[in-house]
Image (cartoon, rainbow, N blue to C red; front, side, top):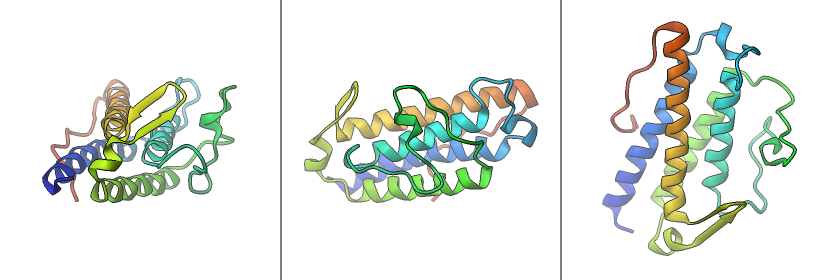
Length: 164
């Protein structure tokens, strides 16, 4: 795959991850684990990072998020994580996702981009899955920014392209 396309994909995917990080960092402690909000702010961040990680994987087979995270997101009964994850834990998971995204896009080949990726109702080429994944991250980053705007009258600014 052409280096220009790899760079373009990462610059925009990385920007979506940066926007998620900015929302996470901007969240006041009082909102982070507010049980009166559904879904809770922290959970939306976790959900986004879990699927970012899974969708950057070669397949669901053998996938495991890094500790302390589990596979509750895959449970058909909709099990919830056993506790509220801290900002630091989710920042570490975010960095894991950012590095996995960078490595995935840097090593992307035409062959891998066209390979079929199946999971549940998701049945896409890996290349299209990358774009789907980026849209998922951006969707939740925007959702979190709206919550911040509504509750604190402030939200992080738009990120044009990945910082690094």
